[in-house]
Length: 139
Image (tube, rainbow, N blue to C red; front, side, top):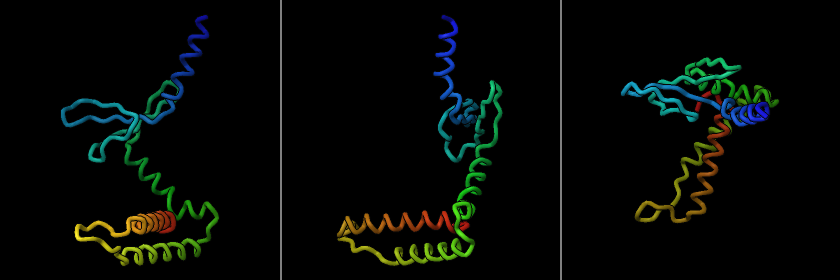
């Protein structure tokens, strides 16, 4: 009977242990632990638990690693050639510049006259920014 309870406890605790944990100390000297990243102004450590052993790495290092894995390297891994990546980067930047140059009509209070058109334009701007993030080395 004890074995069943232990197995059940391990099954419940496994997802918690698999999640990301962060640790930081605030301005008052209080140590915090959280499963969500702390504010950007706080220097935090990301905690890794494996086999009952906890290790930590600076949270900023992991963000830098994630940025390196994204962008043109990800596009190349998806099968885009180097010239395709350059061409798509140039087109995405040109699309963004064109969209930003087209200002929507606004009323006297500064609100868009055609809300659907403004939402569509914002969607296109978001898509161009995503393409820049994927195909260009920096925005």
